[in-house]
Length: 379
Image (cartoon, rainbow, N blue to C red; front, side, top):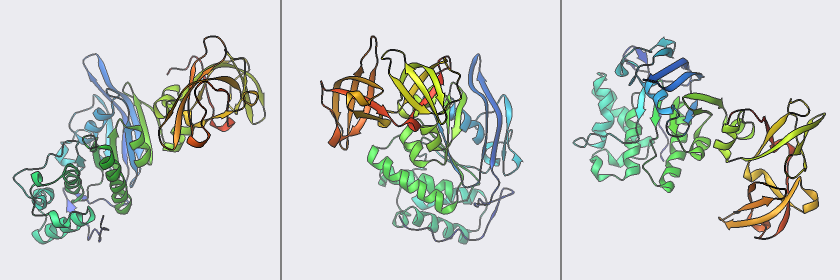
């Protein structure tokens, strides 16, 4: 992908300057949207800094797309406010918000060339022809499409069409780019490639991006921060690392990393660590410090990649390997833990050190990789 050659001078568009990395953030305060008795979005609030890549992540029906549509102006909130660059846009029509939008469906004009599609937003804004020509050329070069300006959309691959759609949203330098599952229709290899390109463009231009996806890996790769949504509410809004390593709810732990859950009780606090006695196996597990009272029933959450196989005498529990599947550099194994109605623990271990089906093993984990939640906590 060619490097971007410079944004040129700022151009006044619809009363607002084009986006720069020093622009003001976007603010969403207590957004709520209902459809009859169904609550689609419930009191969503966040501050998004200029130049930040934020992803709304959640399953179908979680409220992520509805939140994006309210920011874009395609549907009105029942209550709450949206400000962009310090300007209240809550009740403004979409075209007056000056935001860029990239859909999963490319929505390119089939009768226009690539260059004409990209130029269209600038023509609507009355930008001079020479400026349009320069900006279109620069934007296509940035996306590796310099030689495609004269082609029609039907002559392009799906990935190339998605690049054109991105260029059309970028060309007038909006303060915020909104992306609604833009890579959802592409195959995995192309998705992975375009993720890298989108992130590179975003970082180079200092763009503020709000991105919607249901794909956890995509969110982790692209985002500075992620809003994990569930039933219309934001469960946690944090960096990818914090979400993965320090989830605040069992739902976030499971949604981001398919966590293993084990029941237990807090047995004692020892300085920097919390000791938990497992209910079924009776094993004692050391975790990082959690401020929970002795005797409190808890859910222990550990990601499959953070569990380790060890000798039976060295683990916090023991079990038998029920299955082991080779998937390249790792083996995904299921270990049936000893002790009554014990669960099947899912592990991901390096292929060279993987156990085999039927083997007796111990299971251990670094204390810092174990999260605890009160048993009554939802999720």
